[in-house]
Length: 439
Image (cartoon, rainbow, N blue to C red; front, side):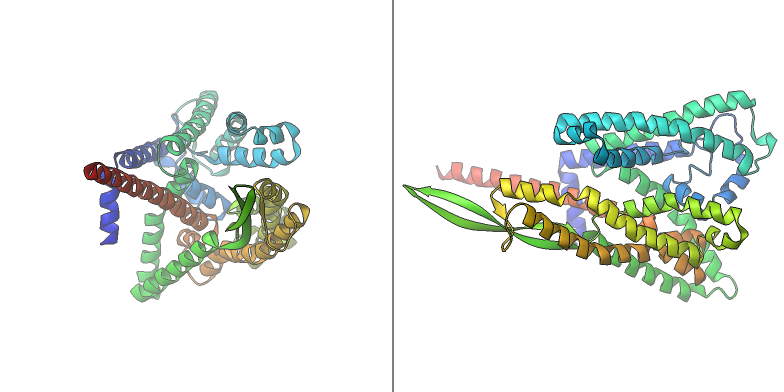
């Protein structure tokens, strides 16, 4: 009943309804464009490309693009070059003084950083485009009959369209963030992941209903376990450590200053790094795979479901969790801001001592958070060993599940904020009308 009432409230608010409809419309455009194949290629002969991207790191990349990668779509690169550019700019902000200055310049600095990220996105797309085109022409073994135009024509037209597709996806994401509801870039990735859900689940159902597959009972058990994993992921995303803070509030009464304590807290996330450690670790894991392909004694590193690969993967996630948390959570700045606003942590002096205390807490909670994140990331490989199909196993953890849960929570919180503001405005108007009637 509450759900129905919430839906009714959403569509009563014109602004919120408009934002949701705009978001859905832009997502529909993105999904439509993901199904448009590159001109000059026969989409009916892409079976070898689709089979070559099942499982492994290419399977994860294909999931992020909603299957556009395996369809040789104009959106094959998707929003991933923008994600890469954002990560590079964020990391450069630690060492490049110009970017550090822009980060402190407020809104004007943010706009310049956004512009830098856009140009870097185009450069990365120009680098990734030829790699993708070369792969579909050689690595995946497409027949010559799949290419309907000359080699030079195909390369030039495909490069233009792939870069344009990335820029268009970036524009759609920014419009959703600005005019719609939720984080546009994250929503596009989430929609791409969810687009693979029906086919993956159907494949799992077919696998389990076959002879000796376990039947409907096994599917129900898998669904229950999946819901438990989702619940644990929600706890990981939302868990925080509250650090008590007290603010001095001064009230002037004649010549006496009465200082009252207004208690609040600083929320430190258990998983402050989000999915970034997984993304960093996946990028680094190309190196062990290359070594495994070159040296036969290390062949176990090429199997993404093998224990050697996942052990290294989990350790990298723990390391990158500490690294990314350290560079994105500036405890020194937090302590300085607290000091300037007349706030303090009870029992600790403002400034350096407070910064050291916050850093100590952050280090302690990052360890269990990073271990939990690492276990969640290798969970798809674990469930795969128990007979779950590769595509369905991807929904049991890793980047896909964390992104979906994080985006869902963020979007729901934004919608709830609009609903609360609307109710508050309604109460204010009602109170105002009552006061007028009393007069």
